[in-house]
Amino acid sequence: MPENRDAAKGRLRRLNNVMFLPLLAVSGALVVAMDSRTWWHVLVLSLGVLVAVVAFLRWAAGDILRVALPCMAVAAAVWTVGALVIGSGTAFYGIVLAGPLTIPQLPRHRGAAAVALVVFVAAVGAVRLLVAPGDVSATLIQFVLVPAGVTAVVTGLMFPNKRFYDIVADLEESRQREAELAVMRERMRFASDLHDIQGHTLHVVKLKVALAEKLVHTDAQRAARELREIHALVGDTITQTKELAYAQRELNLSAELENAKNLFEAAGIDVRVTRESEVDTRVSGLLGQVLRETTTNILRHAEAGQVRITLAQAGITIVNDGAPDAPLPELSGLATLMRRVADDGGELTVAQNDGNFVTAAAFPGTTSKDGR
Image (tube, rainbow, N blue to C red):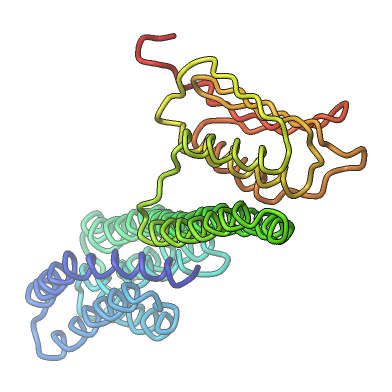
């Protein structure tokens, strides 16, 4: 996501503008004021300060390479004229900013460029010994050691500075990716919940309509009762869909258990429910989803004669004896639930053997307050 990286770098560099641009302007003005003796000295040294400011602004904008060549050429000329003609030991002001800001941004040969920059600054200062003989020690310090040392230090500092910007940009990109993944997970959760509501209801309605169709000529009263249940079921589904849309839906495990029993019995399937302990309220919602999805799958895919439901404090096990000999079709609803259960620290497993199909969800980290 290049736009995120650019945004992060842009914010940091705008902060640098606010913090450092006034400092650059003030220090540049001092350089010009201290070393200028004529108007053309002012012109030359001001040109070096201008180059430094332009290089800094373009670096802050992220496109210093576009102006790097002219900035470096002018800064080098100012340092040469300043050291050899004007006698200004601070004329390297422009090159000590333009060079270190540019070199870390180069696509390759950055190390060689850094060495060449320091050597150039030192070499120009050394030539001062030839054009203006005098106190050798003072000249070496003022025109060679200080300019070359400052250039080397600033250049060295700019390499970790660039790395810092890259890390910040990577963190910003990671944060953005996390936000987008969170949106995707929420969309998947919504789609899964909508599948639970609509898919389950439509399958039950299909069964009840088929039953009502058979009973309409033989048992009109029961057929009417089935139609009223269908009407109530559709109304309840509409309500649940609205609650889902407004993030108000929470499954009730007891209601899901009663609903599953009624559906299995209506389909002629014997149901046995065993409660080993009271279910922890923190996981009852997800266990209700597992029960609902498993109930739908049994009614849709299995030919079960018996279903055994076992409830524990932090888990549920549903076993049906209607597993076919052939491999079961892919159960996408359970696959989605596996991820959701895992995200909450639990585990959802499915197994098929000896004609039985077992669906089990457990949250091993969930215990009651009394530690049982």
